Image 1 (cartoon, helix red, strand yellow):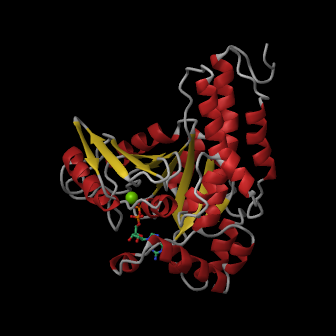
Image 2 (cartoon, protein in one colour; image 1 turned 180 degrees about the vertical axis):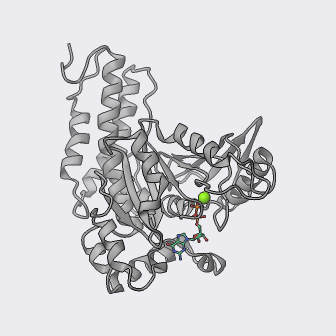
Length: 363
Ligand SMILES: Nc1nc2c(ncn2[C@@H]2O[C@H](COP(=O)(O)OP(=O)(O)O)[C@@H](O)[C@H]2O)c(=O)[nH]1
Ligand SMILES: [Mg+2]
């Protein structure tokens, strides 16, 4: 059976993209009801979840319907990977987007690639998780268990200390409050080998990162702290190598609260795409600092503080007004990218699995 590109469902999915512009999409309740099964009328506090349900869910539903029609080839669900130097804020960004607490802090914290598969459960179902690595697989019953389980897995795979392993940790989370999405947290790019690390650690990590970011279904977030010179960032060059046209690379500036006085204009130039231009441009976000984590500031409170930070900022408030700042706006931006990506990538896959090219049309 040939997949029809212009089925009513696929039209709905693409028309949603056209209607979606930054900060202006206001889907009606009817949109929710026709696109999601039992969607709760209450909004969650999780930015990515909210955006995802509105815009990506209809596309995932479309993919599911195509599968039900007998399209057997596994269609790649979208993934988001983060790359950047150690301590640039990669885990913090993923955590703020997903609402799942990850180990983060100074020094090397992410020592193995972590594939965090978020799977949306039916409304009313309990949270559950499974962590798998090597030959081990065990269940988790509470979000609070996640951080320690990951640390344990890293110790088992890479040993204690600062060693890195390319062995993957898989964490699957079922919850009514997450979008169907895979997030990939990667070790940071190390410039200098630390005590006890092999001399070629830098190259090893780069090979490992490349393996993940070259996958076509992955959107790569290049994470750079606002207080470092972006021209020295290797992650940008790595992203360019696997995605020369820049279709799936987005720049993310972190730690805007740590910018040196007098350098704010440089940061604004970067975010406005005037310094190292990227096709998809840049966003700037503020996540929890170490002290805020110690004070147990919740992710929701952190998002509120972030909004106030940008609204009140003498220089960066302009970036907020232009739609370049905050985690919720990033979540919205990402979902738009994901929808476009799914449409482009999966319709190509469906086409090739059925022997026709989109350009020549079905038949
Ligand atoms: N002040 C401040 N600290 C941040 C921000 N984002 C992350 N951090 C802190 O930077 C450190 C490194 O963050 P982490 O996410 O672990 O970086 P990763 O190594 O790239 O995954 C942690 O102590 C975070 O709390 C931010 O926007 N502002
Ligand atoms: Mg990390």
